[in-house]
Image 1 (spheres, rainbow, N blue to C red):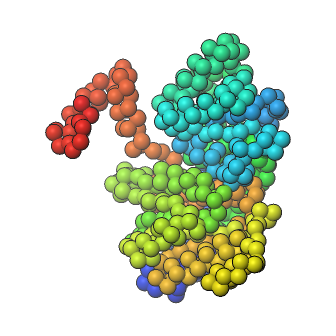
Image 2: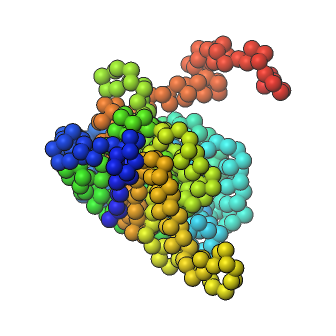
Image 3: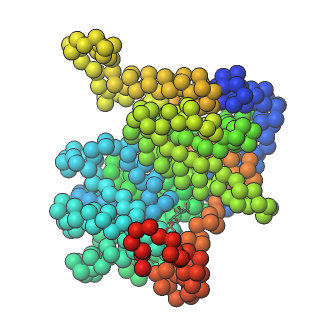
Length: 477
Ligand code: PA5
């Protein structure tokens, strides 16, 4: 199982910048709160927007895994390229799983060396990105051997809709009615714009289950399908999530890793003025998970109002960093800049077959200490050194340790943060499952793109964001 080491968040390590260890004692303030919140979460799990919590279990899990494997088997060997079209919660998990569990050079490998098709996740409407991906697919097997996986719960997300319209048009021109063989849609099983399109065009579909929001959907078909297509063991992933979920049902704070993570971060922000939360894996493979965490932590907890409607401006700023690379970029700031951060380090205990030994024989005294060491050993020494340096500067930090990177432990990590987010939402008294602030930007985009019914917002944009002559350089006209 993953380990959470949190001693460096306490006052006996980092002085006035740490929390009082007595708060965590059985029966003390934070422990008592944890027991109460664990009860609340056990009552709400599986209901409303907390259906995600059941994704690793029972018939919910079995139905999704069966549906995913049926399609994977049906298309096996037919495609060289898989292109995911989605954004936010409909893309970040796909990228994170692929980065964590397949080699970084996966797309460059020969078909026999890869465990599935090449994977491209197109999560923006940057035309250069989509053009580049479509061009490489045309050159590597052609559209004939390319499968598109469009993921959108609503089907109305402008970015995904635009990508899909471009792709559908190309496929239709090339394959006519047979174009549907190149599309797998993941969307709401019963309603919404994408569901209507799928029914009309005859696309194969998998569900974004009811009560599972985008950023909590990686363990549903949203994340499982592209993972299974690329040879990732989705059962091991779900087993890992299930075992972490069990650990996160513990009432005692010191035994419940998700409650502890949430309590540390919420309390360090509230009591010690540390609302900036860095996550810094010492592993390139886990960097995509830091990106996935950023959305989960930011969009779930950053809220103007609490559940009673009171103005609270809650939330934290999640920051991603990469060890050891960012030691040469960010650590200067983290140690000597404002003491307003909690730094989460991630260590991988063993890199297994990927380990590299640094050869002997160069014989230069200044770097002779490296001879015979492993790269993983050096990386972990650097993490430990950073931990030490942060403590020396009284900077609170914690470490999550992976015994190794595999699907089981990645599943544990995902469920750890999802449950921690649910706890943090309750601690802050905010709705972790809505995103009201995203709405205005969407409506403004509709107005700017000329969607009927959004003329007033377009006029308001022109009125409030004109440059009024205050421009240096060419005006946008
Ligand atoms: O977490 C969320 O809910 C969002 O990031 C959504 O996933 C994102 O906006 C995409 O929405 P949709 O799946 O409806 O296209």
